[in-house]
Every structure is written in structure tokens, then in C-alpha cells.
Length: 149
Image 1 (tube, rainbow, N blue to C red):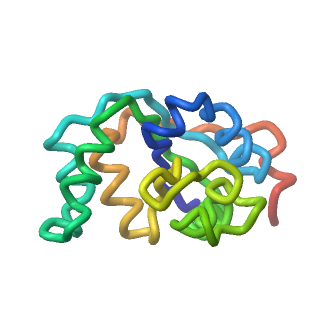
Image 2: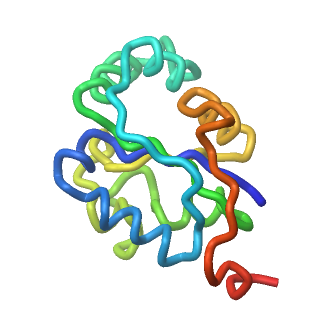
């Protein structure tokens, strides 16, 4: 099974959207295997956005992600990275599909409520930043056998 990293950003936490967004992933059949509410410090923020260092939006993005708690999650499932990307919608909420998370809740490209890994390799890197292996659970979810062959 594939795993992906999802972060509910400060705007999602402050606007009380945690439950609604988690429900989207659960409704699709994804399995939550790790979750925590955390305050991101500068070191973690800079590690998370390291590939953007030197770009004009790096500092504002780092400051924003540290501005309020975030919800860090690991979801598991068949093709879960692609499924999560589809659920989230385009990075820019103005052009995101209306039924997507960003299309429904995002207000601005810099306040788009959610981050998700863009590949399996990114997911592994990001999961490792936020979770130790022992913080991730392995279990059989009721009804899991009905989701795919």
C-alpha cells in the first residue's frame, strides 16, 4: 500500500475545517495511519520547503506555516498520492474544481488550506520530517476489503 503526507495548513485549522477535510479522505476510502496537531518551528518549516529556498515566496511561506498549528497526517491506500492530489484540487483555488478541497475551501493561492505530497518520493521525505516509524500505525480497517481487489 502507498502512503502520502497531508498537512492541513494554518488557515484550515483556524477556520475549523479539520473534520470536514478529514471526512473527504475517509469518504474516498483512504486509511488514516498517523495524525498530530503541531506547531511547526522554523527548522521544520525550512526543511519542509527546502526546495523553494531562494525563491521569492520562501520566507512568506515559512512564516505562514509557523503562524498557527497545523494538522500533519499520513494516509494510506492504493494510489493514495494520486487520489489525494485529485481530492485537493489545483494549488490555486481560483481554478480548482468546485468539488475539490481547495475549490470548496481555499481562498487564495497562499491560503489554500491543504498541502499534499506530489509523488511517492516526496511523501516518503515529508512523512520522515513529521513522523517517526513508530508513530505510524498498521491495522486493518473495517470494510477495507470492499474498496478494491
